[in-house]
Image (tube, rainbow, N blue to C red; front, top):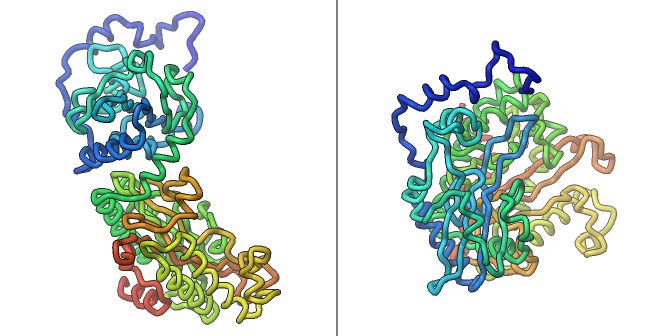
Amino acid sequence: MPRPSEPDPRLPRLAESAGFIEYMGTGWATPDRTPVTVPGVAGAAAAHRQRLSAVSAGSTIVVLAGRAPVRANDTYYDFRPDSDFFWLTGCSAEDAVVVMTPASSGHDATLYVPAPAYPGEAGFFADAAHGELWVGSAPGMPEWSAALDIETKPLSQLAAALRGASEVLLAGNTVAAPRELAEFPVSVPLRRTLAELRMIKDAWELAELRRAVDDSVDGFAAVAREIPNAIAFGGERWLQGTFDRHARTVGNGPGYSTIVGSGAHAPILHWVRCDGPVLPDAALLLDMGVEARSFYTADVTRTLPASGTFSTAQRAVHDLVEASHRAGLAAVGPGRQFSDFHTASLEVIARGLHDWGLLPVSVDEALSAEGQQHRRYIVCGIGHHLGLDVHDCAQSSYEAYQGAPMAPGMVLTVEPGLYFHAWDETVPPELRGIGVRIEDDILVTDSGSDILSDALPIDASGLEQWMRALA
């Protein structure tokens, strides 16, 4: 609040009240300051640092956790650490920094965290970001060090640690970065290296992803049960809120903005407004994923008939997307090119649209680089890497991502769809306003692939039966 030009005795500033300051410094017990961490994260993060160290010899590596963005004025969104930073540390402290210093064994890692303000310090009651009275029990350096098995120091010592360092590579969330780092530009090669290392998930990461997917499947069931209520009142927001509450209860929250699109909203690719009704006779597109407390996220989509039964037109669209989806799934495996499942899915889409008379050219011309007319109805991609980010490893090079073969340990999504917008006059009236997407999360294995989200049916009849069983 604004400071008065003259002190107001009716509204004294507590930081200037001697009696208050003295009294606030006494009578406090020590709360449990153990950081909340996910089992196994310390060992996994140490292994990740070793992998980075092996390809970064001689460089000083600095990665930042970041800070929560402003929502409005002095209110902030919930903090979520930068994915590269968390992958290397397992730490969820805001404004934290990890420094990996070259050593004979590779690198020595030190975690720097803002010092919390405890009883007896003015910040205890005056610092809304770090004062324990404001934020609750606040882990300090000893607690973080014990929880994550990494040397931990106050952030105030970061400048001294970097003094004289050579070849500093900087990455992470650099918004509101400490001024000590102002002289160092963000290292694009380091960001690329981290993204490409994160493509191959270890056993701990895969367990977290399986947890996120399983919890997401449960969330789909919770949402499906609420469809009658959403039709009666609440609409799309009711279903969005149902999933988001579930995700927040079993995990950290939704891994991305939940998409709930009924009727004409279903073809809108990023319909995150979710402010429309749920129409009883329309198809309902649900793109939802739980982010586990380890920040690994699922990304699953199903399209359900709100009535419990697909109409003839809805089923026809769903059947074509299902055929495309199965073709894509079949093209996932070790040694296959990343582009293979895209090509397989889109060939099915193009042929189906041609059979329906919706393409102005032949299938071959549509599939050519100069054609692509079928993409009018699916302008988005068919899949992506999945992990700590819903669109994981996005800073990778083209050669390591779209231009690379799939390898065991990769987790991908396959998500073909058809999106017939309500105002698209190139499609017959009965198809306008229908949007269908099917999306599964797939682990590439040594011998093929494992569909992590296969507890949810992908065929129209299976989905109808699944919905009836939930009633």
